[in-house]
Length: 163
Figure (cartoon, rainbow, N blue to C red):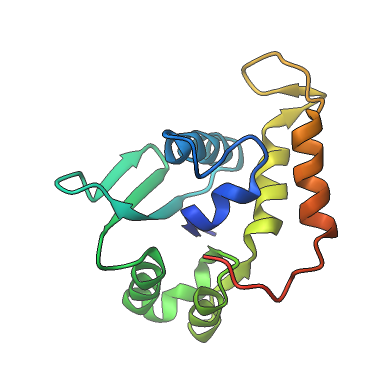
């Protein structure tokens, strides 16, 4: 089942990546590439605020990154993608915690995962027997990462809209 991902909605849910970083999108794409390689999945990730004159879509193996021009949002682009898919949308999983995106996905009968749920799944793919894939580092969480996870699981803000 291919994935459609609201990229800037997912980034803050992944320990170690921040929207404040200049290469946050590339960091997410690298994680998604590893996910696709290990799980044999296809991913299409949408990002808001593409730089003027930049490429609107780039392929990274099984990951397609779509950079949405200013004046339009990734949410709009995801909804339009679901409309184009029509009945085939039911074969996709949409990842976002934005309620409008989730509603659009459910209306097309796509499977929906919150960004928090997918972040846990995505992060677990990075680790194998206590070591991060390809890096040989220990999988122990830093104090900041531990705090980030605790906030995710203990926040109780499930009704909050994020985009």
